[in-house]
Amino acid sequence: MRRLLWLVPLLGLGLGLELRITASLAFSLFPQAVVVERVPEPQGLVVVYASSQAEAIFRYHDQDLRQRGWTRVRYEVKKGEWKVEYRKGRAKAKLSVKDKGGRVEVRLKEGD
Image (cartoon, rainbow, N blue to C red):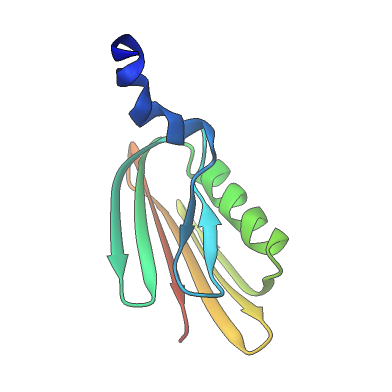
């Protein structure tokens, strides 16, 4: 049993961790990248991945939100940066993904 104790921190990696922002807003972590930092914000969250796959990370989070019933209402892409607004009934959410050279910053916020 002691020999397997070092596996405990790794168990969460295979479970597709879900992060809950508010009662109606949650998303799963991108499984192919290491989370370097997780910072809660008022009505939101910032997650920083050690990765150079910014577009893949954006697509993963975008698809995750849409599968949870959020509808994309605004979509803006610049070089290395994606900004998207979603609606779910009267609720609003904003997703921002930025490529920061070897790190990818994902910011998800509910409200205006």
